[in-house]
Length: 432
Image (cartoon, rainbow, N blue to C red; front, top):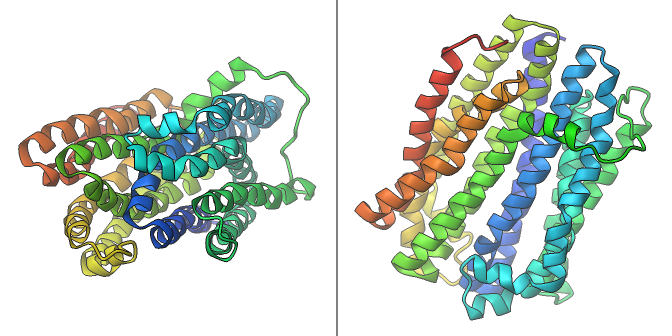
């Protein structure tokens, strides 16, 4: 199949799969807003950074190990088969602190994230349940990444969408029909990756499967070789958590819980936007890694240009939708019809989403750098957009312009990172 056709096949299927994942978080927010009002949205927004950290670890191990697998397979190296089982083992090990926190002290985490006594009381059951299922969230990233990199992106997409559909349907059933409330929302979210893993596992029964699960002790060396190649995925997920945490704390100081609820609306739609661009980056990654493994310099460059162009087009479409339908989108999660929250979220949506013209390029470029075995540059780009620039811009701009400065911090930090990313891409050959 022509490289361009392969690109659009992989990218489109990966976008749909990741959109499914982000949409079940939107469903959570919608049903929680119906069940618990503004406090429920505030709670979910305080929990999002914890989700982001869990997803970031799973994404780093999954993308990094699967990229290493794809490169070594293209080179005919038998060592490729060691990375799958090693990734699964390490995900289970790194999930242990989250599981222990869920068992013994979920309320401590909620207080650390800025929750007051009312929010903590509302959210203990919710936080406990999703923390207990941390191993499944992490392993879902790993299994789907390997299945996609082993030439079966369609099954990975079906698995993700099926898990998301389950979550949406059972959100309603558990929260309202069975009367479980917010713990029911957490239970629906927690079971969905279990279903996704089960469906992805069908790939292992196919003749075309090249993934092997080996009985071996967890290897820190293999993990260290993998993680740098998945750093863009790690920081991409973690940046959402860092941004959410910093914004929550600033907004609590500036305008209280209502402002955090407004940011909860912005953040949930931002998850959908980020999923779209991650879909472009992760969809292209197996093809870029294969080109790199086969020393196909022109093919890798072509994929970078296709990814960049796709990201810019999608950013334009996305901003057009947000700008044209700002108020109806905000109203979906404003079950109490709070005028103050609607006003805050209206401004936030329009300012914040301008940043995706730069963020889309940064996400695609960071994924490319990781896929061609340039982890240090991928790390610099990812850390700039995910931690350094966003924290600096939010602190400075909020001090100068208040809440509008908080919203403007995202586009400002992404624009600064885009300049750095262009420098990294052009200062030396894209393939080494």
